[in-house]
Image (cartoon, rainbow, N blue to C red):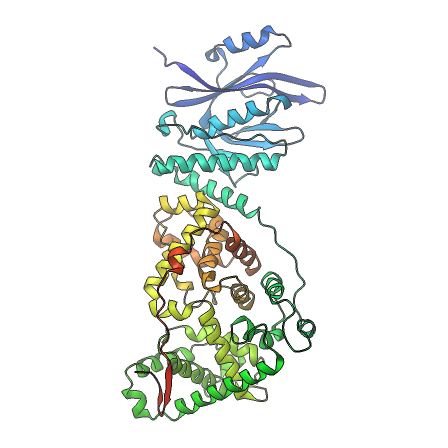
Length: 562
């Protein structure tokens, strides 16, 4: 005895246009036979009785797999690769594997019927939105009737005559359906490939919502227009928006970095800043003296300083050797870098030194001293004054971005970054989050290597990135949001991997990241900051940050006060 055929949905009164003057009308029916899904198309005649006759047709009488334009068909759903929407007029395109597409025009008065038909395709796990083909649903290659044990209620697709809006509604519906299944632990493991493709589409839909404001890039000629007559900023918030969205010329950095790193306040005057700068230079000179007066014995007897000074020495000699400042082993550039890092180690024992931090300070050094000769000698006047500003703006960024707490608590904070980034991703693109959950990669371990250096080795235009972070409403959230933005942008590359083991994810991460531009990440990061501010950061903001002990100078270094 053959298994019964159960009708699931009927797409009524569609038209297949054969030529400018010839067409046929019919119904497309989605049904199940046992565990298999089928589609069949039956022709309508131009009479009221044809609707009744059409509904009574036994699909088994149709020629199986007959796929000729204008003729009836009966096909297994697994022979179909994509269902695609097209416009002007609205069309439903069926793309079988290895055969020509057939296009069916949707009756304008049957928009709701069309969305109900699509709802059943999605609810039954037959097809999901995909990024492989525009405005398309990809048929799940292992779909079967009992794939999902229940079907969600109270969800529907809102019909919209604008095809882009309609497909957004379809994608949102599919996302809600899948997340309901996930909440009931009803997602089968072999659906992961389809989820990955859907996640690319879901993420792109979310990205398309972003409107990027346009500002003129800041140049040195613009600087004098930013202040009032006494040196106060006219509109510092607007300046930050301009910098974060459009960047600035490198010769603007020496003047603006002290503001963006919290060294100067926007409401300060020229005169007030001059006094602050004098004091900063004085403090840095004192640090230099203390460091340079340390004897070899003092250094070796300092259990905090000595081991890390060796790490600094080794790191310094590996630093950007292709740059003029650091080519010469005996050049002044390497000595300057070593002194800066050792002075910072003495000044901030709470932050300490981690291997690779040498890379963090180099952009500051080149911002204030851009020109060097072939021997690694800086070509500038007032060298110590400039080094003082390198030192303090570097410290300012460390503080502003929360790295003063991150670095001493590296293991804990790496987990905090990934946990928070995953929460952001879940709100922005639930299906992308679901992919990482189902693949066992929500810890995002493959991103850990970026955190200490704040992505410095992965983006060539590092100042555009760092300034975007410093210009955020709360820069201490920047690393979480940047990590989320990077994951969202590289996700198409992740989805294309042959499998998603930790080894594969680690191995492909840098290759995927190399395809991402800073100009792509910054707008997304800034959007995520504004996007649905809820309790994402509640746990982060409640983290107890230990206050930095005041320091005192002594002959031979700086130690925490008793």
